[in-house]
Image (tube, rainbow, N blue to C red; front, side, top):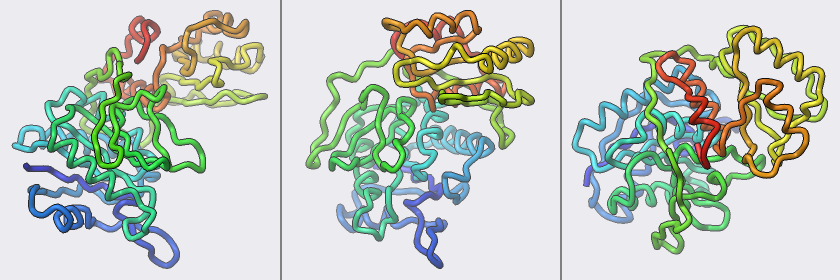
Length: 323
């Protein structure tokens, strides 16, 4: 079996230096794997850049898409990409929407601690990725990650949710993980069912560092004093009930300014079930309520549209069960 490892940095490649964690250009994962399991896998390695994932910006993604695209034309059984956990979900969504129809699995692997720390889950995540590739349990983009319950979950790339603060766990939208490893045994999730999982978007050969998407979260008393200069679309994350303060004069003024500039406003977090009275104002404000989706995936999807190479279909985006 032949696997390509793409190294990008993050905690999984880091070590402590002068009291801080810093990534190096190498990782011991392949050596650790062969020491435990023997030379059963042929690993090739590429390293386009080495960076802490919090320092990733939009200019990094075209490079990764290009490298993966080129690798897909070679005789690999699967690809493993190491990545920092802070922005892992963003990269997973980019790769899902641009390359999600690939014929082999691409596994994004992170670690909650440096590999020399006994608490680290990085090696377990890597081993799960290799086993998944070896058994060809699926094709497309996945994130294997051992959570605090000791189980290693396999998530579809564009279904991963933002981290809960102060938690290392990675979760899927509505707990819709693809499968899991428990006590070393693989188990599909019988409840996994998603419509229109991976859309094929184009990405520019190069992108500016900054996104043209303004992402806002609902807060009590939000003043909406955001500049719309350079913005092409607005994404709002609602409260957990799919609501936000629609009686706010500030919101109404902000929505009017966006409408004047032809900037669409989207809301994520509303399931379109029995609605609260405040939600009736969405249409009046010109807010498009997206169907159920990960907010990170929607941020990335809008960003891809704003590169000028994709089209965000409103009709498709507001109808159905999942996005």
